[in-house]
Image (cartoon, rainbow, N blue to C red; front, side):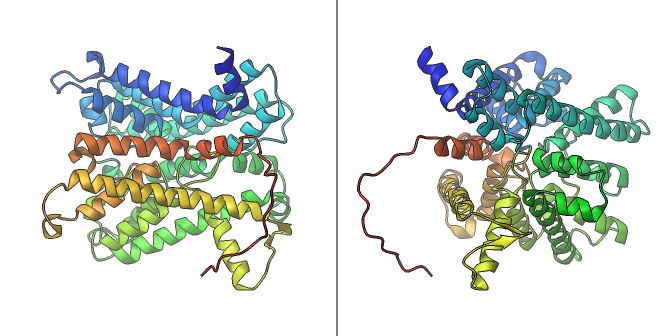
Length: 458
């Protein structure tokens, strides 16, 4: 036992991994019970339960069974609890566990919280965690009220309140689980539902450090507020706004005469904006994903793999990583050896970590796609593949980015294919934590230093 607790204390991120595994295991066992299934529906198999529990705990949203039709209210409540714990609860639980095992707020514990919440400046780490919980429930509560008001116009009170709560939590946690089989297509032209869900997605995906920073400087005028914001906050705001604008314009151009053609102008703009926001890691949709053009699906894959912000409920290799690459590329193009922005210098180690993160995501995506194609197309040539390659690539990126969008392939996956997607969802959620585990290892000094020699790059 001392060896186990010692390992958890030395590497607290391992507690996160253990809690995710435990959460998925418990959630899967509960979902297989008869009272979690709607009467008259086929039983929930172990693989389906593990897939659903992993998708919920890893806030992905891919589903092999209908959440609203196949699961009973208790089953839906179980999924909602997994979403909430997977979105923000695990971070707080892990920190609490490491405090109890370590007996105090050591520098290592503060480093863990800096990785998950970006809160190194706060003197009381437990106070920071309480602040995270209060902020989460306040934002989800506001979304619940707005959605409940809208639902009460056309749903019974009990159904309206439950659907509002489920979708509010799912949106803030960037999970993408919905109680309707067509996601939010029925609300395609509803401004209240669309803007409420988008606001929840953006606030949940921008990251707690950014929200803390904005809250601390909210009382100042805009110019002074911008000057006082941290560089990370500025990069996240610029990157998030730019990616949303890029996705919206791309969807309008590429789908104007296709999926957006029958819609009036206002609904076209709203649908394009919503799809740009949600494909960043949320997984809701108001357009038929399987009916989009190949170009639109490719743009969505780029947005999905970038994802949301660090220390958020979203996935991907993060907006800040993407911004670091853009800034470094521009500085290199101009011939600068040092990267300066907003009167700050970005350390060279940041770009090394960013490169490692993107490289890791790329390698995992390629390997997973290859294996998935082997299992899902074991026979037959390319002419008989019927869009399998694009569908499989979209599925892999969606799972690894913990997005949850699908062209319709998820429910048709074989058992082996579902296991691959389960592993991708798990890795996508724990990727940054796994990197932190590697970075928290003790430094090893090499007694011998050889002459330096550089390979030719480019």
